[in-house]
Length: 160
Length: 160
DNA sequence: GTGCAATTGACACAACGTCTCATCTGAAAT
DNA sequence: ATTTCAGATGAGACGTTGTGTCAATTGCAC
Image: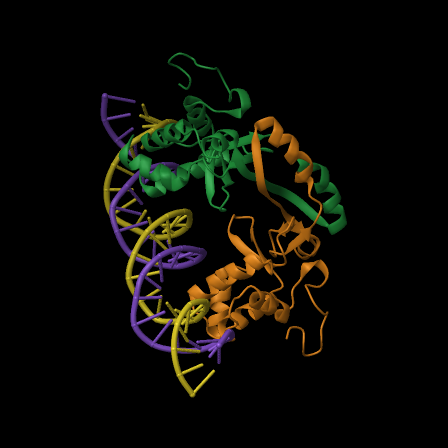
């Protein structure tokens, strides 16, 4: 029975598409995925992160903390969570895949090179030109990737 | 003496920022890099590619064809060529780094999922919003990454 | 031609991710 | 509550991509 204990938030992701752990688990159950101990642990660990994290970080986390999940399970579960829109897989400044909380739908990020924080923004400047580009080049657009790299205010004040 | 044999194109990269092999070698020499046999072979092989290619592909190429260059040398030389603007390192639809001919300056790509072709385009919709985003979020923008994924016309007609 | 620093490449190593398969377990049926 | 079995796990082998080391080699300036 999802969302039981204190019936927190009620159904569906809250503001900004953020899922709580029970909501994420409910989403998995809805799609027919079993709610196993490793999956609970991984979902909890993933949603606890405040910054973008790599799969390998969670593997390390899982090994020490919570429930001891194997590498394969971590990778598989992250993939599921990403498919469900609980997490998004984006790329950091080096092109390495990292996960952040939230659905990927038209999400783009200001990624700080220093602290790794990924600030999402919803303005999509690509939509405007995608149609024109598609026509001009006879190209059927399926999706796009936009990450803006730089330094956030906090990191600039810390190290000038 | 770059561009000798038939004085192709004359000095500097030709249209669309494409380098010929002699021009690429001249660019390396200008920056103080030695013109070694492996570097010639790798530059030649890299500029011969008509589609984006991975470093590992060139390693395989180099092993069989031209001049037998080691893995380290291929990676190092590609890095140099990218730094000189002879090649750009972009990311394919899976987030894997691939190289394409041409400078990366405000280059963005229409990347075909089927055949891998990367069609460059120069319209930069990011510039328009980058300033506003930077102000709103106190973020100092250093660069960005924009790739549009989909299917090109050729691939659509081939497999409907 | 000589000398030296840049370059090479074989190899070891590391990070990241996939795959397999014997074992285990959630949850539906009873 | 027990049974049952497909779905899930995880240890470990494996593949790929990339980096680091270091003795041997080689461009190129003199």
